[in-house]
Length: 262
Ligand code: 2AM
Ligand code: CA
Image (cartoon, rainbow, N blue to C red):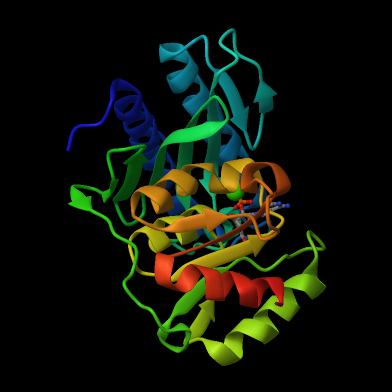
């Protein structure tokens, strides 16, 4: 499957930055035992990664806008197109030497995500999707899972940490969902949670308090893999209101009702 020129640019940038981050990640594993820890080193690696993505993406498409976790918003000459980038999603995992983090790049056109790339460099898994062309992992086509029963399904989430977000609401979600499903996983990368829903590994994912760069690429991946996506509250836009719920078609409504407490 061949992607568009933009998609190829996104994959190339993600691969380059992902490989550099793998080198940094090996260093982080060594730094765990030092008294200072790897904190400053990781902050630097994160910033360098975003700088490299910015240069690669805006270098080739200088008129596009850019929204990144580190540098925030840069308006483009073309107001209709914007890169939305998370250079290192799952930073806490990276910091602790856990190989579960990803580079995430999305392309937005007129408010809609039309292409997305999530690269898990440690596992060499490139998840990618383009509107109308399906979702893929490396060269394999992705489909959301076929499970229909909540009690057989595994759902992923992110739990607010370090005083961020609303912990009570997330704990209530857990309390409602856990008794009616096969398990809840909180593995620390919003982007990979969505990639895994697209791949049928997780049956669904929800989170409160997400940022656009956490979920932008995942939105097109899940949709192109045949999944459903919305914000938790009816009518909200996940990219604007910062909450998300996604799953395969048969599970979606029931899962969303549990999360909404209906
Ligand atoms: P990060 O690693 O880029 O910070 C973990 O549940 C997920 O939440 C990760 O994808 C993490 O992204 C993201 N995250 C961490 N802090 C956040 C915050 N304050 N707001 C939104 N998302 C956050
Ligand atoms: Ca993130």
